[in-house]
Image (cartoon, rainbow, N blue to C red; front, side, top):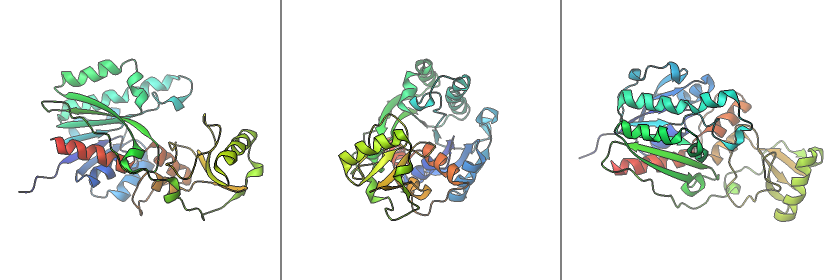
Length: 305
């Protein structure tokens, strides 16, 4: 006898990385919520059967959501990530979006809630009380930090997954052990346009010198961050961010990555469509949960139910 298809809602759904991964795991995503119209348009282009809500989650009535077994949620990481820079007033509001996940869970009592964020979320001063609140709601909680590259994504991207379940024991997510996919396997080395690297800024020139000494004529070069050199094309790319970070260098020419390459580096299937401008596309891929990583987590949860 075939088991019924599990249903999920996706809070902070972005461009649909988690929803796409859930679909790969055999879960039907029945509703997706996000505050950014461009991301909602992208999600609707690729998940047309899903109910879409474009609204600030703080103003959404959780009882308006359709029935579901699994709640997927990626509350804002802006207040947690090391890339945030100096502490600012809006960071507390961003961190507080995690409380909206609790509010939705209390109103809907799904069997499982999967919360994704950066590992630094565990350093949040309210994290312990937030975690204990799940126990107060009758959930068992587990935590796992997973690198997307271990799930077959051609990108090193470490993410925290908090799984709250109405099960006798917490659901532990096993560490994946897929083959690491090299950036070279998904980049289009013949795409353009290219520019002469001689015109790049002084800090980038210093990275170029170090990268050429280590990697030769072809490599990836970060435009900013703590890296002092380049990155081999024979390994997964580093974490993609919401603005252009990596350039592809061949000899004395270089170019920024394309949106299509950012999608492939995030493990989206070919043909996945993004709404908006190029900058919007990079922001969407930089914010996403890679589908293959999401699929591993959701599939592991479903197997434990």
